[in-house]
Length: 171
Image 1: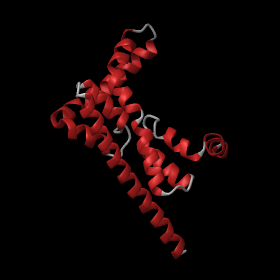
Image 2 (image 1 turned 30 degrees about the vertical axis):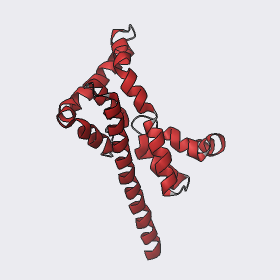
Image 3 (image 1 turned 90 degrees about the vertical axis):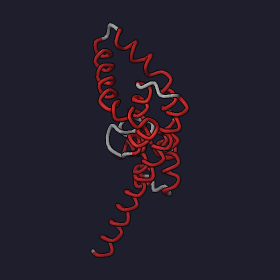
Image 4 (image 1 turned 45 degrees about the vertical axis):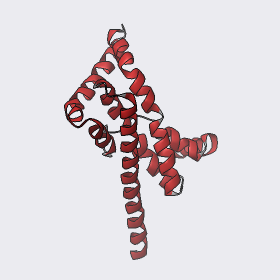
């Protein structure tokens, strides 16, 4: 199964587009795209980083501009699944709102920069939109956060690669 998925990415999409699209997926984002580019496709670190940052930033302006309207519609929709998803997203945003509102620009930036699950550009942009942060300020904050997260993930990948190299020398 994994070979079929890798074959699809390599042969149909191409490695670069696969990394770009992977970094656009919520939760996976750049944190998963850089290792995919680096280890699965054997890309140079700088190319995996660049594609992942660009891909991770593509949804951000759309989230900042549209998420409040989309959530409002989902909350009033007759489809119960949409109601539940909207409620879940609002709770996620509200959970982090006080901390981020306190620190504003740098709060959003640091929230996005921490490479942990559900702390990426999607959630950070959702929170920035929820606290009604200025669009351009939120966009710049997200970009800085994504770039910092990319550096951290790249350093972790470099450490893993170096550790594997040392193990192969020892064995």
